[in-house]
Length: 298
Image (tube, rainbow, N blue to C red; front, side):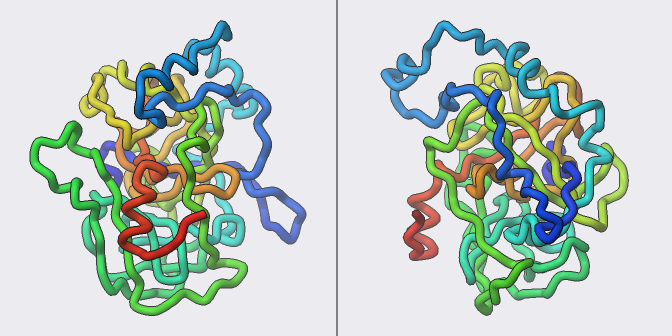
């Protein structure tokens, strides 16, 4: 439901591990810059360390990163098999989530409280249904006078029974701050709309989009952007609007190199030129995840 603010839902074609194909989030991408996502750092002194003589302008990043993509839009991306993304779950009928342990799933706070998830199938309504025992929406999600309406857009789901891991059901590791790098390609999965205001997809889809600098994303002239993004958020996408998540992808995972970097939070339209998708930055709430779940994250 990505508050249209949008949900992510486009992907590249890879058939299955049995065919020797490689998961999209594990593909190398030499053009990614070494510039860290500025909001991953908490002090001005760290920002000074990121300055360089390299041309890191938004246009330069797009020219480097977009060469592989062709003209296919996210609203019509590619279907993928669940065994390539076995951490992806359906949360209710219009949100996604990511398995982080046998009894824990991470999703978006704005998805609200739903009674079940589905796991193990690329078809949204065919996965095994598992009941949710308790919902833990981040306590700051409902705080008054937040810096941004979508700040702290996180929710943990404690399952009523432990998952049985197999080829189609597996956890994903939680990212560290140092995993947040401008230009890094993240793979986003979901069952959301295949075009703005269009129908939901019944088959899981995936898309690859680059992380965009917060400074550039702040200048998007749409509601919820305009300088208000917080350090619990990061942006990804293309200025041309080639690829994006869409409604129905909310809470879906953004993953790179088998690490969960973000959850689909919001955006403006779907693949709207001049705009980007915004994700909740999971690395920023690692302490909260550990406190609630009792897990020791590596």
